[in-house]
Image 1 (tube, rainbow, N blue to C red):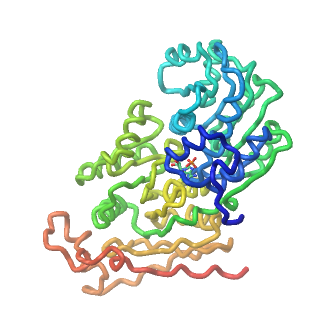
Image 2 (cartoon, helix red, strand yellow; image 1 turned 90 degrees about the vertical axis):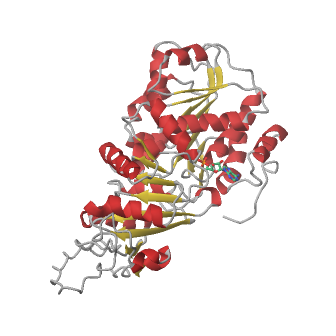
Length: 449
Ligand code: AMP
């Protein structure tokens, strides 16, 4: 890819859309936009490998709006363009983008997803929508209740197709595709292109143009990644310590389970750190409020599970924390993609306990690099995290630690673990700058195979 930056006008977008991008503060098209906009404007099908944070939403929304602006407005209960997303949050975000970019045009749009009453959505669809953004399950419900028809559908967008498959939407998607007119333009976006996605794509797109902005499964380069080895039982305390010491004003924290998210939120609250949880067991209202408060920085920490967080777009998010490593390695890439978005830099830290070595190894093999380890003073683990390697040789079990003589412990001055919370007199380590507090241990170079 070359470094020539193109303006939206140069890509063939109309003046009203160029104005909308300017009002959003964009000066130039991002690489995915520079590639996708001309293809979509020509009416071609598209297969795009792009993760969130690349500007992919504008990459399909802007040219789609331009194409739709030329035709006849949607009639009753009809949609002219359908954007399918895996989660409610992503649907809401895409719909927001459609409104923002389309504000100088007279197109209509609607968004529908589950977890909220269906009746207002049925009423809204009566007048039709030029662009309908939807999650698959609710869309099928609405179709079955005759609230939506697709006879005039011109464009189909599948956003985050890999996550749709992960979330088990394959049957719903196939059912929806079967309801659409055969002649239509298809755009499929996915962060990864597994064989499964390619098989799905074959049944949807015709002679597509293929574009890609990040190498497969590469982590965003603008994200600085490091990991802190720590015992499982010390993780909450370490997180609280990092938040306070580094004055993290806005951090997105991932846990593996909903229960874990709730528990951690309570612990943070107790430590005087404002936090909210976002996961599948929360009502849509609670999820929307948690996200809005976090974006407005009313809440300092948002604790999320993978599914709820997918596609979240929070401007300039500086810090992501993996409180637990995900079981699916690809989720690590998606998680850390929440920071360092659209050129901004961010930091992603993982708190890793010895029992997570298998997950760590899969992640490091997927991203093809070892994540730098930094030991946080006062939180060095008793159960040492085994070394990781990029090759597939088995990991050596940890050597049992030699018992230390009294006074040899490297934790004796920590002031965090042993001093208790009421220890007002800080140990020497508490006064140092965050960078010097952490002991860096370079990961071993991958062994040759
Ligand atoms: P997305 O990958 O679509 O989720 O977009 C990620 C973020 O990039 C959003 O906050 C957009 O507002 C922002 N963005 C999209 N296009 C551009 C652009 N051309 N220049 C700067 N920021 C952009």
